[in-house]
Length: 121
Image (cartoon, rainbow, N blue to C red; front, side, top):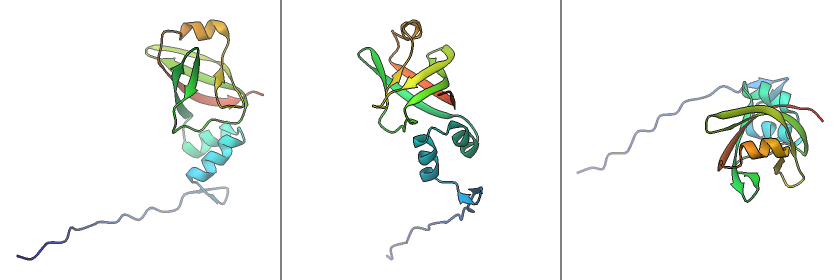
């Protein structure tokens, strides 16, 4: 009995570019590192989303998410069924800082989802 080789199909995907540059994960990571959220949104076609987990009194990004450069950003935070559009700061360690009142609104939550809209400073 002869062994049958599995068939493998290949789909060619055309290169997608913007401003003469290939859109790639490397380009998106570079824009995040520069804090250029507007360009990230343009490249993705939607806001960049990241997920955070509570560690003590802070939320830290899950391992697979890249944070934008340190600065202040307008974001939409969502936990369970609660959403809030606000400004957060990203510190030098890639952790987010929010004001005390907003932090208390999410104090009982374990996971936090952030939709990034723009850098404000």
